[in-house]
Amino acid sequence: MTEREDDLDLRLRRCREEVDREIERLLGKDSGIPERLREAMGYSLRAGGKRLRPFLCISAAELSGCPAESVLPMAVALEMFHTASLIHDDLPCMDNDPLRRGKPSNHMVFGEGLATLAGDSLLLWAFETAILNLLPVFPAERILGAISEFAKAIGPSGVCAGQVLDTDPSSRESEVDFVWKIASLKTGALIRASVLAGGILGGLEDVKMEALYNYGTHLGLAFQVVDDILDVTGNSEQIGKTPGKDSVQGKITFVSTYGMEKARRIARDESLKAIESLSCFGPEADPLRSLARVLLDRSS
Ligand code: GRG
Image 1 (cartoon, rainbow, N blue to C red):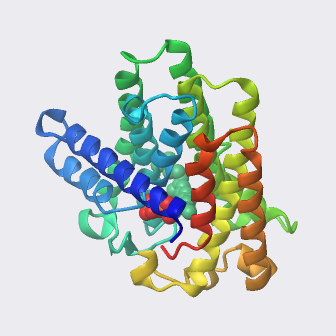
Image 2: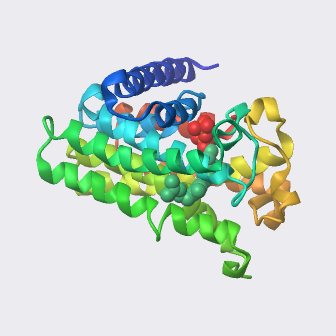
């Protein structure tokens, strides 16, 4: 591990700890959430996960010297939605996976009805958490900007669109770039929105926001290509879900479209493009650069 990656490791750990602490605070007993629903939401929020989206949001905000704790509500909101999307993705009516983050999927423990409601609740709680907790700290127009980016990214022309293209056979397109479209919507949109939300809250100027937009776009693609590769090469202990499901379910992936070798090349190219996008920043963007490098070699 290089010194920079060592530093990244420490930052990632700190981010995980801060996010986890905030999640525990929010899930506290006076939350007004019925006990069984709170258990179901907490089960998936506490099941682990890399907390990548919060890290992206915090690192982007820090580019302008904005302290991590001030954007924590936005970072946690991104993780709440991400967790909601994983719960819904695992349902029998979607990807039907009994395993997530190395544990039985939410519906395996709480049943399909409660799992659906836990996902719905996390989606809506994300907005409540971000808006109410950012309001005392940031000007309303920045909050509105960040929340708009988030909402646009996860709605019917973002993550939900990607999930439909990925799972609904009648929405399938035959063009070779269909796989790029699925990846950029299903996975890339939220990854990009994570850096954009942090950048907006930090008040970054337009040129730097454009750089973050490009970084998020390329990182999101690289991330999904590696995800497709890990579905073939990983085991359930590493990836925390059932491996090999993409080919069993006839999914269109970078590996099925281009083969393993070219998929690896695409991941490398996209990761490089992500790093190049940050050329207008100095060393303050090193955590984002290191992350793009490290995610290429991830095994989980
Ligand atoms: C409206 C709640 C709601 C859902 C939207 C179900 C759905 C519709 C979307 C699913 C999108 C999806 C599962 C995309 C895959 C993204 C992806 C690569 C997830 C894995 O992310 P990691 O590796 O996971 O960061 P951890 O567990 O580390 O957080």
